[in-house]
Image (cartoon, rainbow, N blue to C red):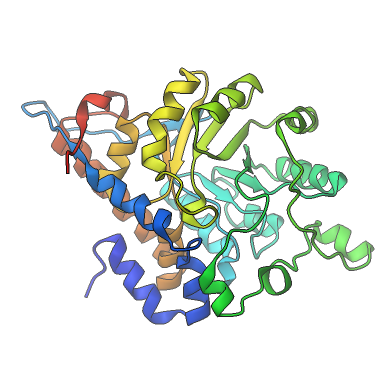
Length: 353
C-alpha cells in the first residue's frame, strides 16, 4: 500500500528500525509531555477558510534569509543519519536539493561536511552548531562551513546539557561514549594530527559571546531554541538574523510550551526585525499553514525526515517533502490563499476545547 501521510512513514520506520535507534529518534525528555504537546497544540487551532477567490494558480514559493525556496518547509538539524540509512546525510542533502528546500546540517552529521556539500552542490544548506569549549575548534568549524558554501549558522541554544531521555537510559545508550565520539575536524586536519575526541557542549556560552561569533564569519546567525519574548528581545539586541522557535522536539526540557504556542509571543517581541521560523510537531500541510498564519516565515521538519530516510533513503526523504508540500498547496487553495504573502492571522482561530 502507498504511504499517503507522514504517520504512514512513521509506522514504516518503527517497524523496520532497531528498537534502540527508534527510541533514540522518537524519545523525548522525562514524560514526553512536551514532545506530544507539540502535535496536540496544532489541533487546538482551527482554520477560517475564505472562498470565491480565483485559486487556479497557487504559488507556495517564499524566501529565507533572501534565498528562494519552493515552499516554506525545510529540514531541521538532526544528527547521525547513518543510523537509519547507509549514505546518511548525503542522501538527505540530495533530497533537499531535489525538492528545492533548505537543509540545516547538524554538527553531529555522520558524514563529513565536505561529502554533504559535494552531494548537493546546488542545494541551500545551513550549518547547525553546538558551541564547543575549544574556541579554536568553533572557529575552524564555522569557517569550514562557510568555505563549503553553507549560507547561515544555526546556533542551538537550548542544550547546555543533554536532557533526561529515559528511553536512551533504559537502552543504556550512552550518547557521550557511543554516539558523540566524533572527530569534528576536517579530513585534512585528521590526517595530519593525532586522534581527536569531541568535547561536551560548552555550557558557558552566553549572549555576550555572540559578538565573537559575528566577528569570525559573515554568515547570518540564527538562534535555535528560543521560546520566550525576553530571549527574543535579547536576540534583537544582539543583532542576530533569525530565530527558530523550538523546544528541541521535546527532547531537552519537558513541560515547556509547545513550539506553536510559543510562536506568537516571539513574533510579537521581534517586531519584524528578523525572520522567525518554527520546528516541532509539524505533521500536515494544515500545520504549515497555521504556523505561517501565526507569523512563522518557514517551518522545519525533524523526525519525519528520518522516517522518510528509513523508508527509501534519498527518495524516501523526497517523498516526505513532496507529500507535505502538496498538502500545504491544498491547504492554501482551500483557504483561498494564492501566495504565501496572503497567509495572515485572520485564517486561524483558537478552539475553546
